[in-house]
Image (cartoon, rainbow, N blue to C red):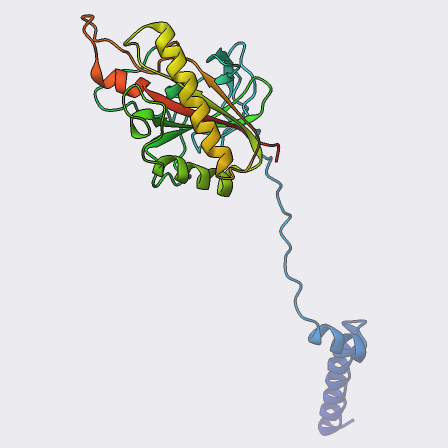
Length: 266
């Protein structure tokens, strides 16, 4: 065998070995190779973690308190009540354990201890044209109560039971009919401590009756309208200064008419 023939045999052997290596190194078919090359990469999936919900922290009620029915302070929490108070004439109201939005007394006057006037007020009710204030409460049965308090000096002359200016009463009727319609109304007359107890009682009764009649004559929207006089027995402010002298501001504050509305259930 000549040298040229041996070179041709060696080149053929090398070529056969190369082709064999390329074909025998994988079991993939052309189809599987095409599928592998065209399949998108699989993204890694993170396992979601579940956070434990925070436990609700319920504020414990004060000893002897009842769960609240109203959020007077506007903080999203119902205000619990700690007992009731009798304000005379069948008006027994629940008292919040903490009164965060009390009505402020008239300039120069000092509220008596346990004054009705310390109850929560409202900033959402328009009292334009009403020379008075509005109180919010619940009675001992849980009925919602709204009390409009206005100074009787704006209605009556001293010692009189005849209404002079009717502006405050007219605007109160409009407020009731637009916002607090369909409830039970009790008109309550009050005097200061000057004069005799008997004279004060009779004057307060006559004034309450006159206001009740005016409400009914001018179509107040209520199921019932009653009247009661309480004389000087339920002051909201001190009638005297600490030294015992008369307090004109406190006395004027006590000369008042209250319109108590027990509202129908919503």
